[in-house]
Length: 221
Image (cartoon, rainbow, N blue to C red):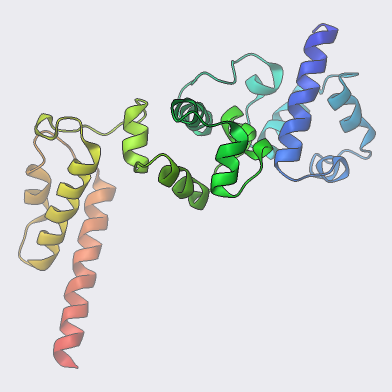
């Protein structure tokens, strides 16, 4: 690793640490390193963390070793997960003609935090995602679908409209809940080629049992 690569790696470690709100001392403690001097040397590009420390750094800072090593491009989707979301947020922000600061002002965070979201060095909590979707005037499923990150089959009759499809599924499930005699497998069979996982079927069944019990309690009360 040359001097430039060390410097860039140090910068990524520092950005990820600050995004997690950790001091050098706190990070050293989490890594079980006796002194923060090692952290300072890593961030300054004076030394490179050994493999085991690098893996621990990635875990603690909620990023990847590839990102810290500069082996992936921060603004391109890699597979699935937070960095894909960050890339999509950047694309949507630019489509709306917003700067990072303007978007941050709209949802109540700093420009630096928006940058960290887009770089994938900081996780995005659910409330922040909701605020972002309101700014982008879309739902989270529709946002994922727009950037090819929605991995559930959408039957052709919904014309790719994930919101319409999810509304249909919700309505159908609610109808089933109102009918205690409705068979769960029949519900699954009505989804034109979609397979429900065993866990999803169990969850629906549990909810049906809850509705039945609540109805019974009302009748007895």
